[in-house]
Length: 317
Ligand code: UDP
Ligand code: MG
Image (cartoon, rainbow, N blue to C red; front, side):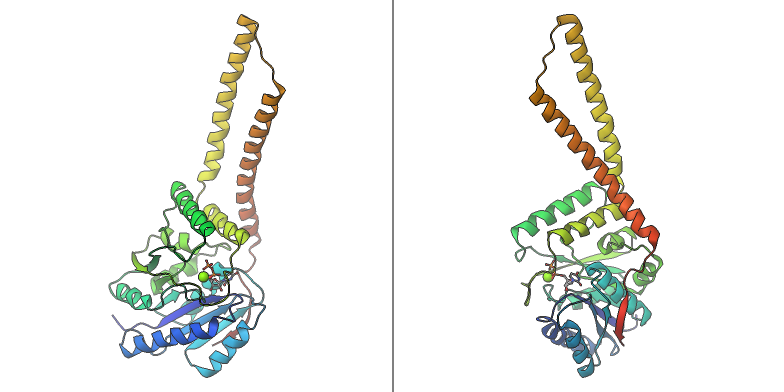
């Protein structure tokens, strides 16, 4: 196998406090890998500024002037971390890379794991997923929501690897396939699992964020989770039908019992509190079901419009 040209893709959103340190650390890794003949000299780091409002882009520009390893692009506005990674992977494909690694700008993932990724790549794996050894650095809220998310995904038939964020290596073949997918709302973890490529897993230790704070909040995290579910599973839609059927069955049985009571025992208890609770309960279920269907309709609506996945403002090549 020829020595590969590697692109390290780094999505950044308001990361002015991290970006310089991240670039230095990643250049160190690139230097080491080049010296050890694990990657070609033309390998590079590709920053995607996801519409930051701080000085992230100015720092990327000055890093680009100082080092031939630094390339990048800036989005016109914030499009979200999945699209920032996607843009980086598309750039790696365009720039004829043999493989690309995506890693967060806060370097919570151990950058030296990239060497292990490359060893797996050499063994012929198309995708190498980084798996966190633990979630020590996460808040209790994040731990619980992440656990629920992976459980729900697995229950819905999408077996994405547990504790894998977007720290992974993908080879040219995976990049070619990614290029064929024109979905607006691509959930990358689901995508790389779904395609069925030869995948390896490498464990790594999570570090605390270098500086700044997490760019995800409750809303963006639930958006990401919902997108993951609605892009890769129609099981919730089926559950809605099953639930509807079960409720009708239960209602018919209870109704029959009530009628029999009335006819044979002239006994019919009517309690308005129970009425209220029941109607709220079933009303809630109905709204939940409508909402679930609505999520899919929303997804169709957004896909049908066919808007660009992101808009590049400037690119540094
Ligand atoms: N990020 C991004 N766009 C966003 C939100 C986050 O590009 O809208 C980037 C962010 O700069 C970081 C990565 O995605 O490089 C992961 O974000 P973060 O570290 O804040 O997430 P956490 O580690 O808390 O899950
Ligand atoms: Mg982070």
